[in-house]
Image (tube, rainbow, N blue to C red; front, side):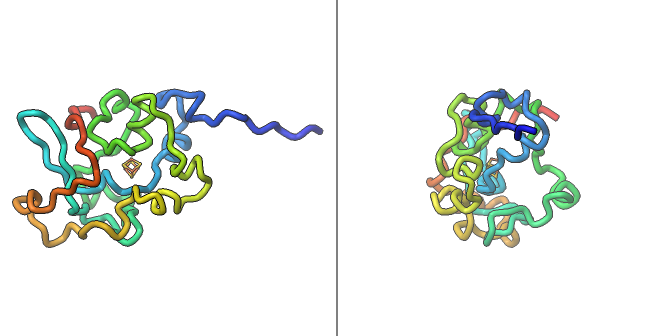
Length: 162
Ligand code: SF4
């Protein structure tokens, strides 16, 4: 019996975000942790500015959520990325795989799906691993003191989409 031939073109090049399976969609996350940083929005322009203050659940040594499955119980306003957000992902970091594909920019060489190595996102200096502060102990009023410039500002805030 002949073996199945492996598709030469990866799914992220043949499917739109909306066409992806749940598993494919989830696999797009590169584990950078950038979206888990507190952000400030310019209320006049809608621009998003990232801070070096992490969500209280983010493990700053690994850049992974400390309780991904139960995260909404700990952080009710955590935004769960869904296909309904496609077309409205400008608030995410410009390196984010979801935003990149939504904007037709493809995945970069350092993305784990391309490199085949989950460490490549850290080696490329994209992830927040070891670069940010745990969220506990920093008040919202202090966020402005912790703005960072190594994540280009986002374009717009997340719209009211469930
Ligand atoms: S910014 Fe995008 S790729 Fe990075 S952790 Fe968040 S969802 Fe995943």
